[in-house]
Image (cartoon, rainbow, N blue to C red):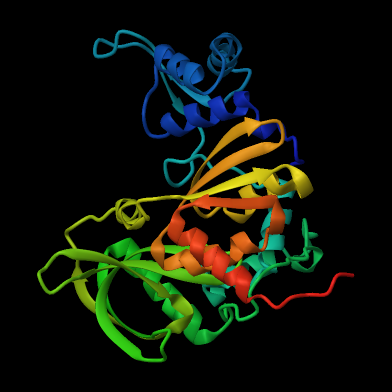
Length: 337
């Protein structure tokens, strides 16, 4: 009989989660009543053990097999009657989860993380499942048009190699096209892939060595990569990209004063979500926002700030304020409507 699990399925209640963890740990091992109580206390309320454990032990839920006490074990022990591969108890998908997966298959970016065989298998399994939403249901604005070619065979191959390199910490020799249309070839340790929704591009955060041997962080546009070669060399060092990013931030943050007109605060929080920031409330309807950014993205940040118009006032730093003034001065005068 085919069972459909709805959005608010009992399978995802805390009771079911407790039973799942008990059966997982009792698979191939033995659990005492005290150990089952500790699991129930961890994944549910303290009083949950009063009803769950007796049901499992007394046979109302006949999933456990009793092993009587022996000279080697002073108390009764229990093990799972269910057999399944692996330590994790298999959990069926709900109708909502299936619909979500079906929707993801409509997004071209999903092809970067799955092989053609995996995609074909998912499409076959979810053939009769209605999608939760469609990509065309969403209208995105204020985005770049030259987005990365996610369905390109070469792009997918490069992306898969980068993912594997990040997982294995393998050094890769990468040839890429710079912003000045020059080909740059070097050996990097891939560390992180990051997606920019506005640009529609993936960036690779990677580590290279300077001539003196010290590490430096570089950021490559995956869409500009021309060739990747595996070196077979595994890095024994661990690098924190977050530490490098913190060091690359400008010493003086961008300081903005926001008014609450035109939903400016909410828009700013969404618009600058990719930056580190801090917000203070000045008074009713006025806020001060501190944005910490990498100098390399200053021009992009400048354009974003200017798009807000008069609802945002730049307070500093002085160098950024001068750029805003210069940009505004160069704008052509528009006749009043």
